[in-house]
Amino acid sequence: MKIMIIGGAGYIGSNIALKLHDEGHSVISVSRSKLPDVPYTQVTMDLFGLGFEKVFAQFDTEIVIQCAWITSQPIYLQSLANWTYSQRTIELFQIASQAGVKHFIGLGSAAEFGYRIGLCDSRISIPMPSTPYGKAKLQTAEVLLMLSQETEMLFTWARIFQVYGCGQSDDRFLPSILRAINENVKLKVKNPELTHDWISTDDIAFAISWILQNKLHGLLDVGTSIGTSNFEIVSAFEKEYNRNIFLEVGTGQNDLHEKYLVVSQNSPLLASGWKPRKNIQLEISNREQF
Image (cartoon, rainbow, N blue to C red; front, side, top):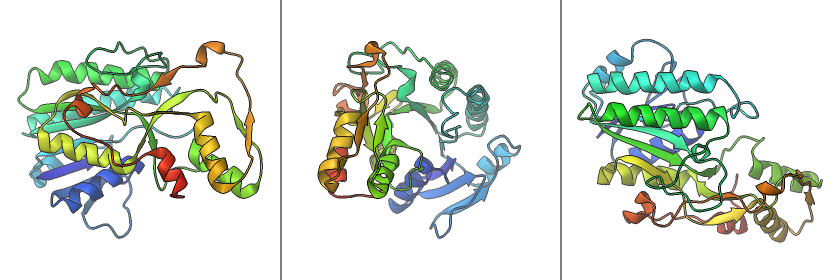
């Protein structure tokens, strides 16, 4: 298949691009910058620039995967730019539909659910986003679901849970733990009991491939169904590296404790037969790079 990945030079997009290329697809990465030494086609183009109609037509695009979004720490959760990215994603969906694209996949986020007590299943869980990031992602999904009823193009909204993997930004949680170990300093963790569903970039790429192969559509949760708390993550690093780096700094907000974002085993992607190949605690014990 001819697959265009918008934001293909990004942290998640680049992993998806390489996975799909290795499977034999014709991959075109569209991004503001190019990556060195990649085996697929790269097109330098800004998400907000003109000309996507021509690019879709030029490469006879069958699949569009829209990965581009604001993710810069620490501003992305509260940034008003989230609404700009939301509107642009909706516009790209409409352009893709008019260009005859067969399947449009957008990347959502677990932040659409907000922190909750209970497992997440996009079919039945009620989203309660608390940040502009989560709210903008949710609004995008809702608008695209509505628009998809008026087109023959398949639409999938893949809600990505807690991401980890090689090449992550230094200001993210796992790299900050490794930095504390290397510098032999204490690590302050505001919410040690906060529990996430950690999923590797490799498994995200694997999930996107599975979605394409099986033509899954609608709202999908991309996670492992295994919850791991911040405390458990730090403890696993301490055990593996034989260091004592953990310093708990509570927020005073007791309602945050015991809250988590974990995918239900009955969620559509897992129910379809897809299974993750990696486990965050095993990756730590194998001293994988983060």
